[in-house]
Amino acid sequence: MKLSQAIKPISYFKAHAADIIRELNEQHGSMILTQNGEGKVVVQDIAEYERLQETLALLQIIAKGRQDYKEGKTIPADQVLNELKGLISQDFPK
Image: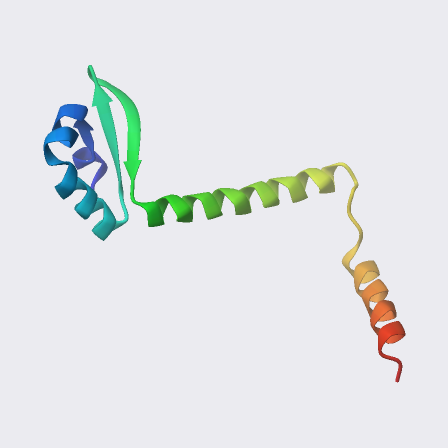
């Protein structure tokens, strides 16, 4: 659904709720509902909502990693790999 078609007054949603929900489910879209000419809420397909939440979680992980790097809370990859090799060789000697 195009954004220009996805902004509707709440009265339109009330009158066409079943059709709107069906369309949002089919297109995995969102709709902005207005009240007194102002945007108030977003109605969203559950699959799209879940996808958005997963995307936000990944972005938070990336942001945390960048912050850790800036604060010097990281270990060089070769050091981590050597430590893992050491752990593996202890658990599985040749």
